[in-house]
Image 1 (cartoon, rainbow, N blue to C red):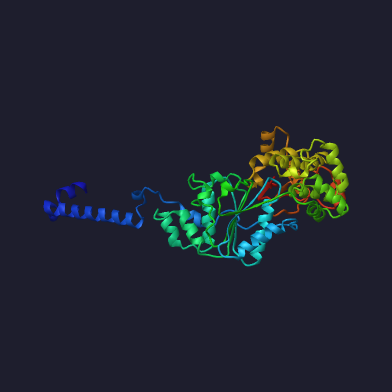
Image 2: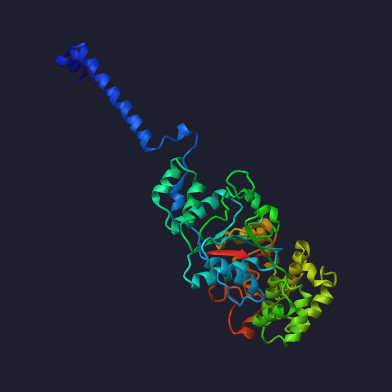
Length: 434
């Protein structure tokens, strides 16, 4: 075949003029197609701005953007909640920062505000800051997508013809009545994009939308958040409100005066109050009354910081100490009941926080390798169930399960409660914030 073609070329191929004309035409067409393709793509490289990967950003995220459910009444925060609700009801509510030390219930206040806004028909988007500016860009863009940002505007950002952050906020300025919550922004300097301070309002956090951007943070500095931000610093709960938190969770643990005395002892920290109430509500707990729990704190943790001056709980380090010593009672109880892996597993989970942790990750082999402790699937399940029951870990949808092949650490638990401890959902597990 090759010899035939070589020996018998077509007549037109014998003309150099025709051959070179064909090649020239093909070259012109190729160059034209190349320029047309670059024109359609916006030629981002000519502008020195690479395209953003917005295909996955605009798509639905893999994690929920719904606010967490508040299971119990929120006590002592009506002033802050009313202020947030008032800002949500007006167009251009701006940016609000609920701030304060750990354990003061900032996330709870934000979640309750989100629930009230949703009840009023507002669009609510919940974002958890993961110390990742790229993830925040994706989440806020998805929030704008929920609020109807035009695809053409996203395409402009994708091709570099517009700034993504400006495109998102230009759209949020036109849609009234929304509430976007960014929870746990304890490292605001990393928000981005770029390194400009938040107070310039050129990054992802701006007070210029037609709704309310609500942030929770331990950073209480007005210089960080800028002059147009409304700061709502939280203080420890008053004794009366703290007593109500305890009575909500453990209504049979004593009278209101005893609850007030324990609330004062715990420095009015909602997280510590919730942990104490959850402990007292468990039938197998060693201390069953507010008075007994308070006495245990005095006897077992006499060096508890902030005890003589409960208002000192507003100090971050004191707050950590108060919560830690409060949790110790629950962890000691679990250890006494035979849940020997409860404390080391909680320590391991704390290292992985704040990201939700897949339950499948917490295999017995990992516990053994990481903590140097013997573990089996049954003992890991039991420890997680005990932590869940005492409110030290949370899961999206806790379910009841039959007891594992190895009995729960304390057979008396099954007899006293009438059922096995709840097993955390197989989806994700998270240490309670503190």
